[in-house]
Image: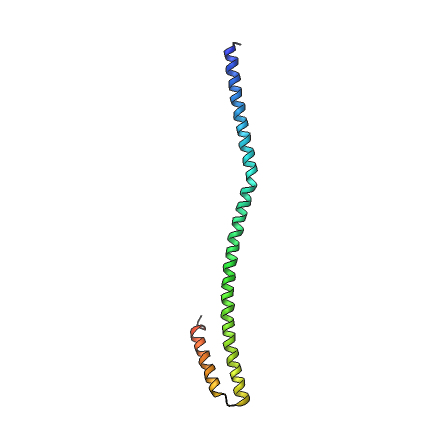
Length: 111
Protein backbone atom coordinates (compact mmCIF):
# COMPACT_ATOMS: atom_id res chain seq x y z
CA UNK A 1 0.00 0.00 0.00
CA UNK A 2 1.19 3.44 -0.76
CA UNK A 3 2.24 5.55 2.26
CA UNK A 4 -0.52 8.15 1.65
CA UNK A 5 -3.25 5.51 2.03
CA UNK A 6 -1.63 4.21 5.19
CA UNK A 7 -1.45 7.74 6.60
CA UNK A 8 -5.11 8.43 5.75
CA UNK A 9 -6.16 5.11 7.29
CA UNK A 10 -4.23 5.90 10.46
CA UNK A 11 -5.83 9.36 10.72
CA UNK A 12 -9.31 7.89 10.22
CA UNK A 13 -8.62 5.25 12.89
CA UNK A 14 -7.51 7.99 15.31
CA UNK A 15 -10.68 9.97 14.59
CA UNK A 16 -12.85 6.91 15.18
CA UNK A 17 -10.95 6.08 18.38
CA UNK A 18 -11.34 9.66 19.62
CA UNK A 19 -15.07 9.60 18.90
CA UNK A 20 -15.37 6.30 20.77
CA UNK A 21 -13.56 7.75 23.79
CA UNK A 22 -15.82 10.82 23.78
CA UNK A 23 -18.90 8.59 23.55
CA UNK A 24 -17.67 6.45 26.46
CA UNK A 25 -16.99 9.55 28.59
CA UNK A 26 -20.46 10.95 27.82
CA UNK A 27 -22.11 7.61 28.66
CA UNK A 28 -20.15 7.34 31.92
CA UNK A 29 -21.08 10.89 32.93
CA UNK A 30 -24.75 10.23 32.16
CA UNK A 31 -24.65 7.00 34.16
CA UNK A 32 -23.06 8.76 37.15
CA UNK A 33 -25.61 11.61 37.11
CA UNK A 34 -28.67 9.35 36.90
CA UNK A 35 -28.88 8.72 40.69
CA UNK A 36 -28.56 12.45 41.36
CA UNK A 37 -31.49 13.23 39.05
CA UNK A 38 -33.58 10.46 40.63
CA UNK A 39 -32.76 11.83 44.07
CA UNK A 40 -33.71 15.37 43.03
CA UNK A 41 -37.03 14.16 41.63
CA UNK A 42 -37.76 12.28 44.83
CA UNK A 43 -36.89 15.29 46.99
CA UNK A 44 -39.15 17.55 44.92
CA UNK A 45 -41.99 15.06 45.28
CA UNK A 46 -41.48 14.88 49.05
CA UNK A 47 -41.37 18.68 49.37
CA UNK A 48 -44.71 18.98 47.56
CA UNK A 49 -46.18 16.35 49.84
CA UNK A 50 -44.89 18.12 52.97
CA UNK A 51 -46.41 21.40 51.75
CA UNK A 52 -49.81 19.72 51.32
CA UNK A 53 -49.57 18.15 54.78
CA UNK A 54 -48.61 21.50 56.34
CA UNK A 55 -51.60 23.16 54.72
CA UNK A 56 -53.92 20.45 56.06
CA UNK A 57 -52.43 20.87 59.55
CA UNK A 58 -53.11 24.61 59.41
CA UNK A 59 -56.70 23.89 58.40
CA UNK A 60 -56.97 21.40 61.27
CA UNK A 61 -55.68 23.97 63.74
CA UNK A 62 -58.32 26.45 62.57
CA UNK A 63 -61.01 23.80 62.96
CA UNK A 64 -59.88 22.91 66.50
CA UNK A 65 -59.82 26.59 67.44
CA UNK A 66 -63.40 26.89 66.17
CA UNK A 67 -64.41 23.84 68.25
CA UNK A 68 -62.66 25.22 71.35
CA UNK A 69 -64.51 28.54 71.05
CA UNK A 70 -67.84 26.75 70.73
CA UNK A 71 -67.04 24.49 73.65
CA UNK A 72 -66.13 27.48 75.84
CA UNK A 73 -69.40 29.28 75.06
CA UNK A 74 -71.39 26.10 75.71
CA UNK A 75 -69.63 25.47 79.03
CA UNK A 76 -70.29 29.05 80.15
CA UNK A 77 -73.99 28.59 79.36
CA UNK A 78 -74.13 25.29 81.25
CA UNK A 79 -72.40 26.89 84.23
CA UNK A 80 -74.93 29.73 84.26
CA UNK A 81 -77.81 27.22 84.09
CA UNK A 82 -76.31 25.23 86.98
CA UNK A 83 -75.98 28.41 89.05
CA UNK A 84 -79.61 29.26 88.34
CA UNK A 85 -80.73 25.75 89.28
CA UNK A 86 -78.76 25.78 92.52
CA UNK A 87 -79.46 29.30 93.77
CA UNK A 88 -82.53 30.23 91.78
CA UNK A 89 -81.50 33.88 91.58
CA UNK A 90 -79.08 33.96 88.66
CA UNK A 91 -81.54 35.28 86.08
CA UNK A 92 -79.23 38.08 85.00
CA UNK A 93 -76.36 35.63 84.48
CA UNK A 94 -78.64 33.38 82.41
CA UNK A 95 -79.72 36.31 80.24
CA UNK A 96 -76.11 37.37 79.74
CA UNK A 97 -75.03 33.85 78.74
CA UNK A 98 -78.05 33.49 76.46
CA UNK A 99 -77.01 36.70 74.70
CA UNK A 100 -73.44 35.36 74.42
CA UNK A 101 -74.72 32.10 72.95
CA UNK A 102 -76.96 33.92 70.46
CA UNK A 103 -74.04 36.13 69.43
CA UNK A 104 -71.74 33.15 69.02
CA UNK A 105 -74.25 31.12 67.03
CA UNK A 106 -75.13 34.03 64.75
CA UNK A 107 -71.45 34.74 64.01
CA UNK A 108 -69.75 31.35 64.03
CA UNK A 109 -72.45 28.74 64.23
CA UNK A 110 -73.70 29.33 60.71
CA UNK A 111 -70.60 27.72 59.16
